[in-house]
Amino acid sequence: MYLFDVCERTFARVPVVAERFRELLRNARDRDSMLVVADEMLIEIETRAGSDRAGNVRMRIHELLPASETEESF
Image 1 (cartoon, one colour):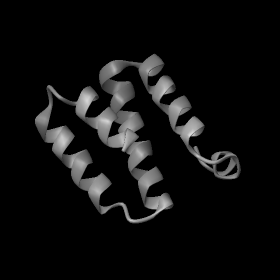
Image 2 (image 1 turned 180 degrees about the vertical axis):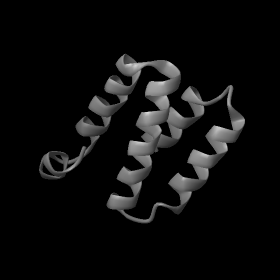
Image 3 (image 1 turned 45 degrees about the vertical axis):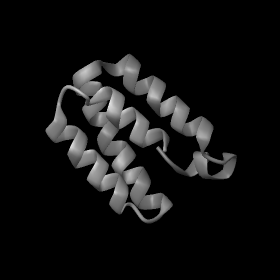
Image 4 (image 1 turned 120 degrees about the horizontal axis):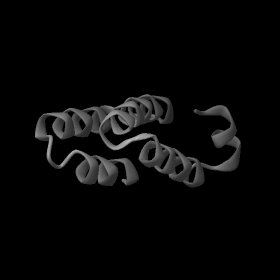
């Protein structure tokens, strides 16, 4: 749900990008596919909103993942 919220807030002024990420998130059926979408979103966030914003989102994703999974991702 966090990634959907980030998508809506970050890409509200770019409906085509928002819709693309919403669709990718809806189709992400497991942890790995969701993290692939998160990586793509982080790249787009960095391009549009800067590295500080992307870093904040990345940190929050780490906080939301269980400790053992956080070590494996990103």
